Structures are given as C-alpha cells and as structure tokens.
Length: 144
Image (cartoon, rainbow, N blue to C red; front, side):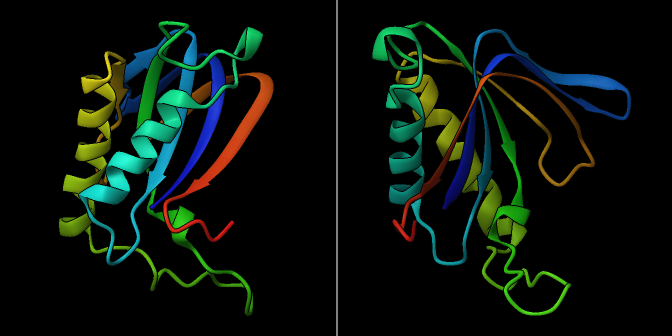
C-alpha cells in the first residue's frame, strides 16, 4: 500500500459538483492499494499517517488534533519505467482495494482523528492548500 501524505491548511474533494468531503488543518492522504495488500498494510499506513512528525514543534496529527482527507488513488501504483504508458498491473482490483481504503479510514478514526473521504471509483476534483509545502511518500512494503 502506498500513500502520498501532504500537510494541508485545508482540502476538499468534489464529485459531480457536490463536496463529498473536506478538512481543515491536517493532512490529505492519497492512498493506493497494491495487489496482495492486507489489513495489516492498512493499519501500518494509517499509523504512519497519524504519527508523522510533520507539524510545528515536531508534533503529529494526533497531537495537533488535525484532520485527514483520505482519497483512494490506484494511480499511485502506476509503473512508468518503460515507455510512456504507465502499467497498472501492481494495483489491486477495485473489489479488493475498496475495503482496504475503508480500513485505513477506520484505523485513523480509531486513533481519534476526524476523517473525511472521497468517493471510491469516482472522478473527483481534489483541492489542496498544501502547507509548507510538506509531502511525504509512504509504502507499507518499504520499497522506498
């Protein structure tokens, strides 16, 4: 499982002109599920998102009472090393990915974080007011 975590002042996601989710100060986490990922991967990514010390005075999302906007994004598993067309072969099938993205959300909520989400498999407009900017890449398989 991969995630791109951005520290934000605010973020929101719109689907068909309707705001599906929004957040104040905290993070926007784009989450991509790889084939073979499990709930353990979801728990690890959620804990990392919640405990990254990317806020003032080296505090984390929990300590700052920050919020999270979690957006499913299978394109994080795209492989563009060959040619010009990315391969999506490493991405999990939608029916496998959706419950794991939901598990990330559940884990974050269990840690006391207010979480908003996008809509799985929808065309979304994501607006992010990146703060810093601070962007961190996470991978549950620790490939980077």
